[in-house]
Length: 117
Length: 111
Image 1 (cartoon, rainbow over the protein chains, first blue to last red):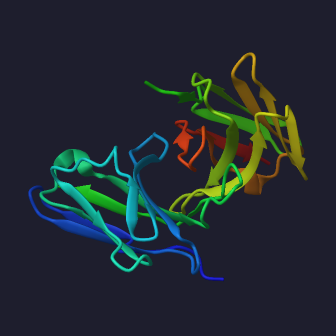
Image 2 (image 1 turned 90 degrees about the vertical axis):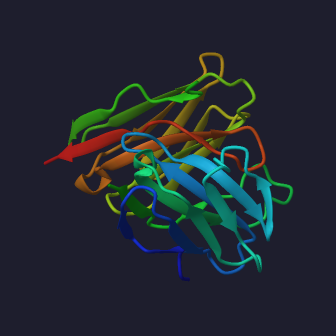
Image 3 (image 1 turned 120 degrees about the vertical axis):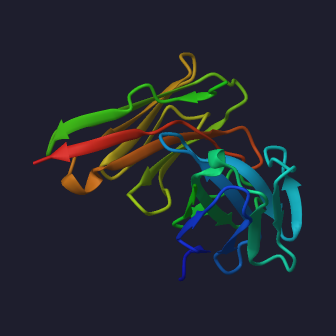
């Protein structure tokens, strides 16, 4: 079974430029997450999708960040314009729908390491 | 406000000995706790979890202990192996699959 796929793996851009990250979740996983991981920190949730609906985007800085999951499968996270402080690893994860159990394991992709110069 | 805390950024253990990684939390609404393991240039992978209705869960060499009154959990690895060298993240959820992660502990298992 293929895991969560993310591209690109690394991206270097200058500040004020736009950047986009792509994620393809595990087949059949309806829930998709984007996390931000700063150096020396744990992942922090940016947005969670159930199919194509963003059900939790409270931590997404909406002035410069946007995300979409148009067909409820793959997803794109965009930053425009990028700032120096956006340098971090952007992780995508997916899980089956929650259903009636308290927690469903989240499977993470390898992440995209963004460097803003 | 750090709701999940891992106060030890690093831990070094000899091969064959026990590794104990600690985690504290402040949110009483958390009812499910997990440990994730992360190798460099890879995403975190799930290791072991525990529900708040239990105080211990064991899976092979890995055991997680939960002390709800102290809001503390720990991960024990026995015996430690060089392949266990990684960053370990403690995470917690109070429902809805929303995970709150700690800052991680870098474990190094030395030969």
